[in-house]
Image (cartoon, rainbow, N blue to C red):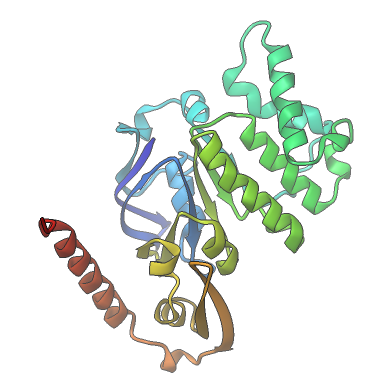
Length: 287
């Protein structure tokens, strides 16, 4: 499956949020979107799943414009787990998760739907909560139930807005490892917004780094998670070390605004690097 984002822009009233976003994301893969608060990460995935309509530009799923796809058909392709788990449903966990099966609902399909729901609850380690009321759960349990509801859609693409935000560190690692595994075993394109740079660095196949409403850098964690990029985008001084082939960030200090590297200079270096890589790939192999 493929997502192609073509010159997408989005504004809330007169306030621009996304500016000239063009990007190809191919799956199956586990992709992390990083960037500070307010750079448009959630807005970008809302444009992908049709919650928002881009001010200009287009989004294509496997070559088809999402504007030409019905919400129900899109829900068979794309699952979505929102950031907030504060919704309170007067339903059991099973009934709440079952809502995710709606795009696949058919006459006499209940038994199969229940099998999918219980298998997913077991995979997430929350089958013991099946008959609990959703609105009686903790924030972390809410988050896992919402994740289960997205997974039971059996989507080709799964969009997650900080799915581990209410989990402790152990469960953050468990859920992220599970998502990485699912991308491989079930052939899903999983795109996860995250604020934990080191978890993204450890598990993501590729990283999209956003800054000021634009795509600042795209590539492997090693290519994107660099000291220069973190200094510019986050305004922090750091040391990036190698951890079994993956970058690991050691934070040092926040920088005053006037000490950040010029973003234009960093973008120029990124373009130069990509041009060098493109030239290297076009060179004929030595015989």
